[in-house]
View 1 (cartoon, helix red, strand yellow):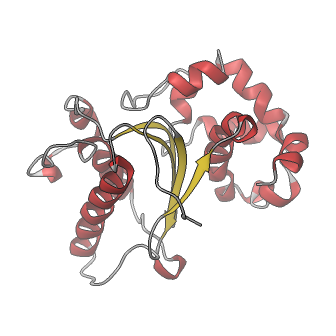
View 2 (view 1 turned 90 degrees about the vertical axis):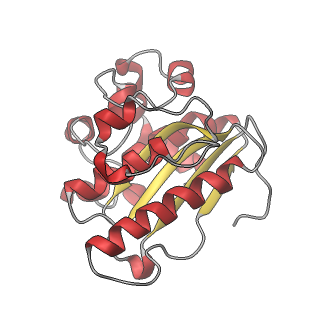
Length: 221
């Protein structure tokens, strides 16, 4: 899938899953540690030492001022993650993903007394190079959490059955950047450039979700 070299100023959808589709998040602490890694490893400098002493709040006080990428959206699910990122410096995406995957794998393996690879091979990356993808990729990334809602597990194939319930579920899901889009989030490391451009207010985002069923059939996700 990845047969190109990312360039600065372009958007990319990056994702990966646990080896053999195993879970990479087993607790609240795991999700929090992954987000801390997203924040503190996004730097040209050496990562901060003793990263285990940081929680999300304290990490947000140390957001690097020399980022490798801009993080426009993210979503974490039990066995995989999604990122919408923009390269800031040459080779920034590769360096960023390498650092936080290695860092998180080391944490997870030590905590769970395991060895070997945590992630299923190299991460996947899609260049967001047209207006349709640019408009709907934040929706796609955030709606992935619906896989955890029993009534909407097959939303990708069949559309959303109950859009009100889906929005309420997503609004209360802690492990994505959606709450930033809705103006109720605590993740200042998420860039607001794309969300402010595409969705001027939470109502516009909710309207886009409600229109997803018809639109997704034409986008081809």
